[in-house]
Image (cartoon, rainbow, N blue to C red; front, side, top):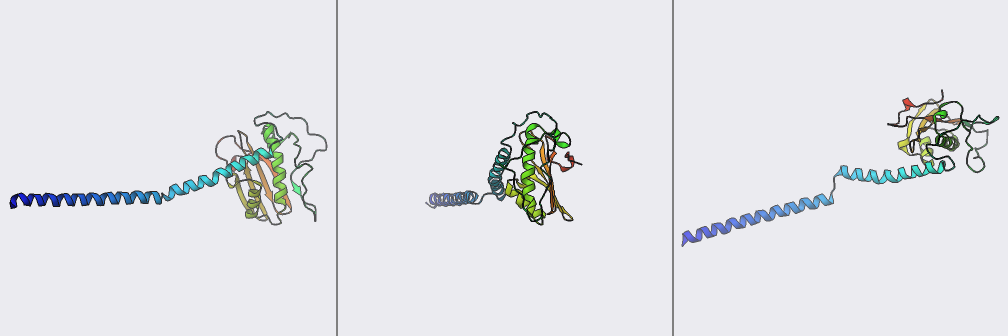
Length: 223
């Protein structure tokens, strides 16, 4: 009897141990799965957050570019080069008379005058037209700063819709703050080159390479 019962008890005990082990393993697997669902990878979470923040910002930037250039020819339009009308004055630099503030021109838009010299001649009709509008709006806004340090200039540019990823070379040298804005869009080459010291603000169009990363060293600027 003992020989028949003993194996029976041994088998029963072994099965219980195996079942107990399987139950523990299943519980552990379920716990790990639950932890994985509740605590995603920090890197993945950061990437998701970055995408969620940058996408609306980029869309707003592109919308601003379209709005500023709404009266300009379509991108890629070849530019004609008529002679500059006699007596025409450039829109930048902008200087504020003592005790006064800068007032935008009637209608808020600046009538573009085709350039005959300088880097602007390399821009297509859309870019040089849009460049005039960007020059005016940036110069007027930055000129309002009494002490335009980099932090204040960045804040003003952000307020106008120019995102950080398009602002380059923002630094202060003595009393002058310099900055460059990458405005390339739809195959264009437009950029802005600006300086400000609280009394004089200069914002001029510059030309960037059509392709590749934005590199200040490779820009065509006024000498």
